[in-house]
Image (cartoon, rainbow, N blue to C red):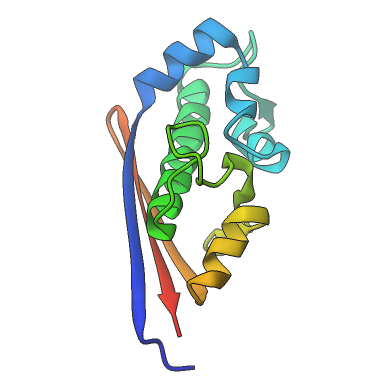
Length: 149
């Protein structure tokens, strides 16, 4: 397969902003953004489920960084698709949960699209995705490349 073009999206998310949202609304705040599988992955730190009363600050930070990275990636994917995310002022956007980052042990995570996100990707002939997430201090940044053939 010869790739002829790319669609690029990038986004940055404030981890502190997510902490404030969690403090105000609890775990349901993140259920709007993440699939059940993504949330379960973010919550599993070592052998503990985070956040809970008996978790350390460091374990909670792992949770918030994982969530922030996935939210940043979803916004980056929506930007690469050229439509934005539904609920952020884009009526033609894609729902948060139509984009999922699947974590596989000892392998790079895989982006899975469903519903409207998949339809937009197919319409643009995006056949493959390359994604990257990074964290530094209070921010998570993500980049998504949609490879067109």
